[in-house]
Image: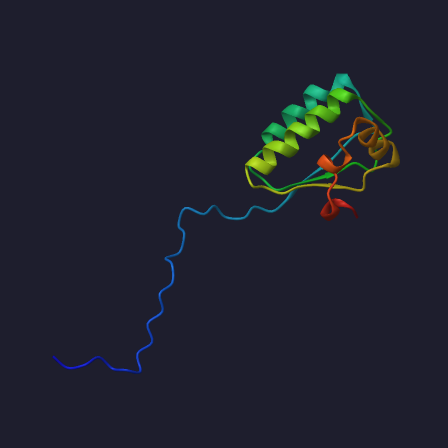
Length: 116
């Protein structure tokens, strides 16, 4: 048996992962000025429909936010983290940020990559 060509390079590399899902473009949600208990369910449903997609949430218009809406957003943050998806909160208004700070959840919702 003849020896193989010694100039042949063999690279041991993993096969491409065919199960990997394609990266979707980020969707954008602009939060309304008034986030009270009357809109909490609507926001929750809207976010549920956007599950499994990267999401950018703009909170610049928020002037009032209820604890229930904060809980909805925290639930979304945790779900997106579990799904290994991007959920970025951008432009939090001072009212929005203050409410999160008072509730002790500012760092849970607002991450450095989300400040713009």
